[in-house]
Amino acid sequence: MSVEYGIVNLSLVPVRKKNNAKSEMISQLFFGELIEIISRKKNWSSVVSNIDKYKGWIRTSHFLSISKSDYIKLNNKKKKFSNTEISISNKKIKKYLIPSGSLISNCNYLGFSYDLNNVNFNNIEEISMTFLNSPYLWGGKTKFGSDCSGFVQTVFKIYGKILPRDAYEQALHGVEVTSIKNSKTGDLAFFGKKINLITHVGIIISTNKIIHSSGMVRIDKINDDGIFHQDSKEISHDLKLIRRII
Image (cartoon, rainbow, N blue to C red; front, side):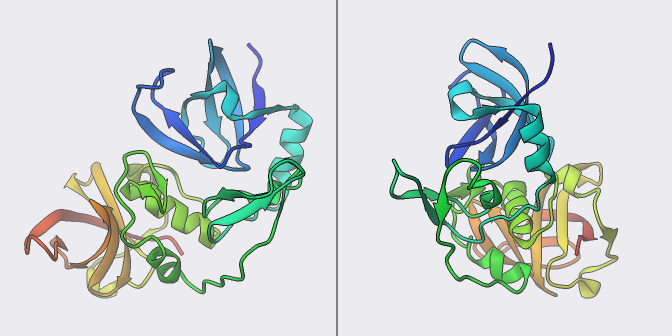
């Protein structure tokens, strides 16, 4: 079967492990993102995200099919992501809210216009702080719910850096930083039982603080042993690796 192409024309689309509405959500697709359709089964499509190559199932009604030529043209276009939640509109819909990290450079193709709020972020810390207190949501990537790697991916996407979806893949990017004292704002800290079993990630925002999604997006202290949880007063995640991405 030849590959088909599509574009997400809804605000946010859940990506599921299987072609079933009861299957776990493993990721999300944002407004304007391009996809490749690998296969179809009833009302579901197996798709690959053009942004991070993540694969999963979405409802066929949750995207607009496009031609290969349009896919290539849009893919080659300079990407612009919204740095906050914004309202878009067209002749039928006067106000349609899309999340931070939406691919607004594809708005015009989908027939929408927008008024971009004048929000200027100078660094990763400023962007990450806008997610503070967002609830933990497995598979989520927005301020309304995100898991640890989804939070990191969206923050960096808004900044202009595309990272993989999962923490263990994010840990393969950038260069290694030897210790917390040598870290700087924007470095990524990775945690797990072993170096090859990374299960958690957060963003260092100073030499001894980290912002991460654990129960909610929160700030805790960090040392060379790991995250010192402010509530439990103990190490909640064992530090295995620090990487400098930017």
